[in-house]
Length: 220
Image (tube, rainbow, N blue to C red):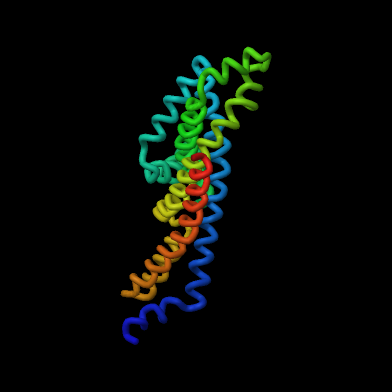
């Protein structure tokens, strides 16, 4: 009974509700960041694949710079540095902005790699048949590339969901933040809280990993 006491003390209805509220913030931030990073990353990846003079090299420089920076640094920069030049954001917006910038760079590389994986002959055949470059990209290259890109994109989104926990450094009221408040109030009851946090993260990420795995099997 003594072993169960900490769990009984921590897993109260109010605490579980508080954790779910934080988890709701985590899912909200992740969902918005996923949509934005997919759109922005898709555009950047496609433009880099098109190899437009000046534009593509400039985008390559930006992407490589962002990919080689710690996400934590981007979060700090977005929330603490941007206000110094007049760009102020509330905590949730700052977290979404930092995650979107970082993940857009990652997604753009996946999309560019997927497009490059399609044989060059497909592009030449499309152009030879009378299609414009855009039409060839849309109807021939992109459908083939998407089938190859979906599994790694889903895996990247799993990483994004986990990375939302880094926003705790700017006091984003997410799952990890609310968990810290609970164990701070309960004193030494850290293990029960962390077990619950791990369980909640695991459920969503494992479901996404199953989706990624199924998509990979379909490509085989």
